[in-house]
Image (cartoon, rainbow, N blue to C red; front, top):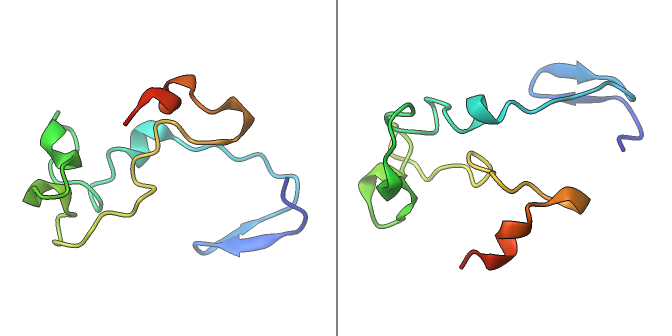
Length: 81
């Protein structure tokens, strides 16, 4: 739980504010993904050029977070290699 007010990304977030993460928007951010609305499994192979952002940089590691974390972490994550 957040213990104090913070500024993040130009937003003022007050202690106690409810926050939600839109996973669909996170995983389809056009600044992080080439062809964000297409199903391209090769984008997760770091040796493939499509794994980079449209500007050619390495993607932010949090641009795809299907399992998240904490006490309610996805059980399947423990079986992924």
